[in-house]
Amino acid sequence: MRPEDPPDPIPGARLLFSLDPSVSYLNHGSFGAVPISVQRTQQRLRDEAESNPMKFFHLGLDDRIAHTRRHVAGFLGADPDGSALVGNTTIAVSLVLQSVRIGAGDEVLMTDHAYGAVSMAVRRQCRRAGATARTVALPLTATDAEVVSRIRSALRPGRTKLLVVDQITSPTAKAFPVRDLAAAAREHDIPVLVDAAHVPGMLPVDVSAIGADFWVGNLHKWAFAPRGTALLAVAAPWRRRIDPLVVSWAQEKGFPHSVEFQGTLDPTAWMSAPAGLYVMRSLGADTVRRHNAALAAYGQRVVGEALGYAPEELPDPGDPLVSMRVIPLPAGLATTAPEAHGLRDQLADQLSIETAINAWGGRGHLRLSAQIYNDADDYDNLADKLPGFLRSL
Image (cartoon, rainbow, N blue to C red; front, side, top):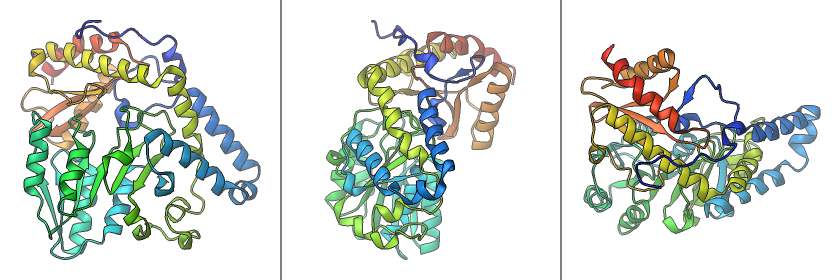
């Protein structure tokens, strides 16, 4: 297969999902899509819970959640005893921010590629503590060495209390060298939180080898789990310091139980996560990753060409297995978050094509995802219709 060719479809993959066939769904990165078999697994668990709620929640639930945690942690190369299941990455970020105990005069360092909700959480916590939220600007074209150099130069030993970095950025679909960044911060004893929301299922990962103090990834994006499933991995020195956002009956048990047990929280999404990993392993995890990355690259190329870009002008994600790609929109379009969301909704309503559109760096960017239910026709269709659609605005 030449680099410019789309990959061969995975036979039968489209039939594994219940997506509306009238819609080109090119935005797996936002909310994922749950295979039918995983939906049924979760429904069976819900039926079990509703048949006898007392029995479901009080007889063996801790062991079942621990089993799921071990299964998921094993897939990600994380220590199961130092990991906790949580609802999503943003919940884990707030949990970490609370546990690090930032004080007056401290600062939290992040990049201008940070996910919007994460950035808001950092700024809120700093505002409450009298601390400073500081941002490092990283060009979309920055190499790994440039990313490390810029962030290392921005660290302020004695003042920087936490570095927050993405493993794969949400608005720009760029992979960052988090292992090198964690090592750079460790030189100054600065803890690191890795936002790996898009990593599980998309990239092969060994969480323990990264060396971050905190690492969190969603399984409901690329690992076929039901929405509301993420894993937070915490380095050993921090585990006793984790302070849950909500105090519940497992508080005295400590991490991870104090984080995972939240009364009547529905745990069936977590318990169904192994079924999602089973789907991926049945298809071949490497096969899925290679297919999605190649298809995303094809989609970026054909849509980029339709908007007048040569292939070498399009942003490089920095890792060949990233299965999201961005294309800068014409200047003046979607330069703010409300404008970007409005344009995304218009595109969906008028063309029945679901994408992500983000405002970043003063410009709108179209983000395309690729998953096994997509094929080349989805991107060819967008390439054919998008120029005229944008001209009509």
